[in-house]
Picture 1 (cartoon, protein in one colour):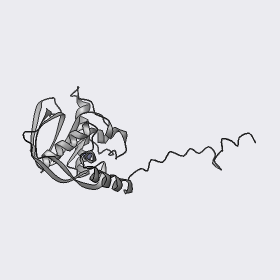
Picture 2: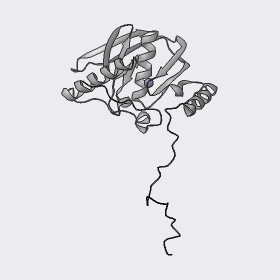
Picture 3: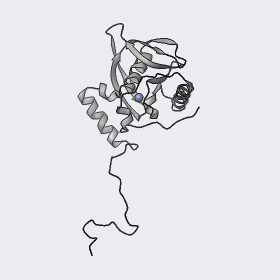
Picture 4: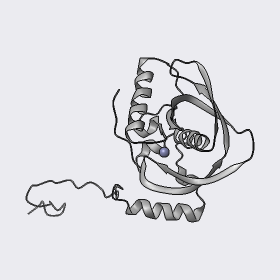
Length: 186
Ligand SMILES: [Zn+2]
């Protein structure tokens, strides 16, 4: 059980749909433990495996003092009700934006031993389950904002101190000076 580094916005793993879990083995249980430890250490409401760089359909949650996990989740919505509320993400640290979500959700899946389980969630739990399941599809909560909100969010992200500006890596050829590709003949 170890706290692992969380992948941040811009990391391609966050945009890659995760694979279904097939083997409910010790390795999977270690992943669940790592997700749980990291989520608790970061005081997150939830954490999905891609946020630790693992492309498997697993997430953990900590909502209203209920800590748990769900594997291979499938969501059902019992009604049409929606709720707008502040939402954040450990992969987009420090930024919160009002996001519209379904108010009620039933999430069916499995526990780490492969036993079927379901979460019947409302409010914050429903929001968490939708947010984490989105992660497993390579979707971020920014994608759920309206165009204006998304534009504001992207601006805030580009200004965030953790955000990698995406500059190409500099390759030093010589410790003294950069070598010009046209200057080698002299
Ligand atoms: Zn997130």
